[in-house]
Length: 206
Image (cartoon, rainbow, N blue to C red):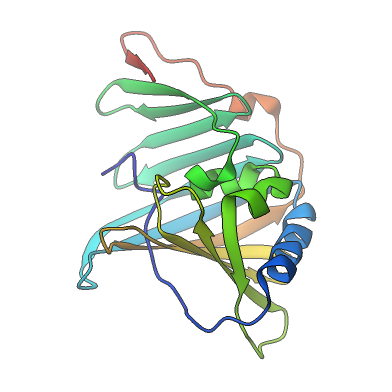
């Protein structure tokens, strides 16, 4: 459950622009984001819309390839990507999992934020929602990879800022992630994206 805590749901079905135009529009917005720091609130619902889990913490992204997601409440967990490797560290379980960073951005929503925007078209079917609200834009992304860990992803922007992500998985679970206290394109120390397992921690190399 914890390792999939970044993944889940909510799909809006009113689409407009053709896929190629929508992909271009999304890439243009992502290209304006070289880095992002924010507080996040994450709410997961079961297929009957009953609450399953609420998480909160801090996230940091530096494009391309660097990502950190620190869950603070109700438990501590770190996910750190450094362009080559992804670490998932669970202090409570005294366990750290090491994985190679997949070059395709479609595997996790987290890597979409930090990944190479030029690969979006090869990884996703993208559509853009109709809206009459000024400066508000939203896109629906469906992974082309049948083994992707989520079924669909909705990302919404207020101007150039990504302010939420809504996900749906194949089991019908939904997850809303809301960003606040957003800082765009500020400097982030490279050490933020470095991870060394503490002593006495079990390391699983996948």
